[in-house]
Image (cartoon, rainbow, N blue to C red; front, side, top):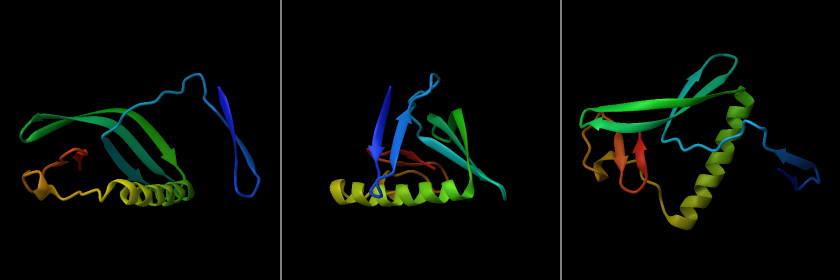
Length: 113
């Protein structure tokens, strides 16, 4: 399946899903970097005990510094639109009663660490 979109400058972009394309849910993202690239590791975090979490990593994506900056700009823009529509996203760990230094759980938003 493919979809064509037209940019404001009339550039046409065709989006195609490869045979191994998949959608996944991640509530954990780790970022590693070097002089050449950024490496994003996506996973699912599960609270195992009050003091311990486990993360099952399932996908790693390398980005050039330019693509990482472009992704940052896109996320910043879309987060601003989201908050304008649905309200401020809080990362304040005190709202959920979690201990300092550990993973923070924000009610309704899932874990943040």
